[in-house]
Length: 278
Image (cartoon, rainbow, N blue to C red):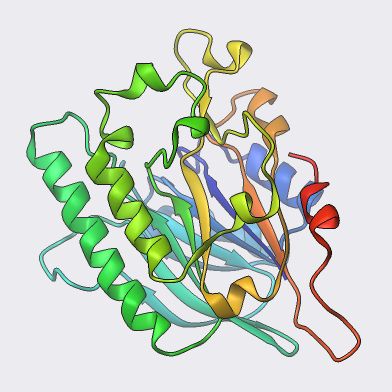
């Protein structure tokens, strides 16, 4: 099963690029963030014509998440538990089954948190606490569970080209990074770091100051796997080339391949995992 995440920064703005990438990459499942569309205005028919089922948790002009799947989308949850008054569309979760492989997939658009010292940063940290609580609950089910999306967190200095530029940004604050580590400490695996240690592996380049041409990128789009999902992990990669397309998102797709183990198969060797392109 090939599962991807992509913050497309507006479904209308990326209505040509997203289908182009889907035809090229052929993922089974895609978690989308920042679709910036209410459910009724999401161009569902475009993707159904390509063989994808669609589940959307939208919001007018802001936020919005969705799941596209070549297989049935079951047991859909919209909204992160823990705060009934939170109306921001940032979380969607569903179960996808392909033959003998069943995976629960959560797509998230974690709050940015800027500017520091405001309620936006407080909301970010509170949201991450809720995510941790829900993830802890899901792990008790001991099922293959994956949390994919735009985390708006730079985990380590090597995850940005110029760390000093981010010292006053919510994405790189000790509190944000610590909350991300708390998720890992629950038992999740950062799929990209588990399979590829290549330097300067980024998923976002700002539109400003020539960041793309200078490769001033950051890694904020992550795929965290429960122990049961990590046991199925084959590889993880970044489709960096999409950032060079016309009218690109400032993010690029990240994807993993999971495969159910059989008696005759086993996890690829370390050399095989780390040789994948980014």
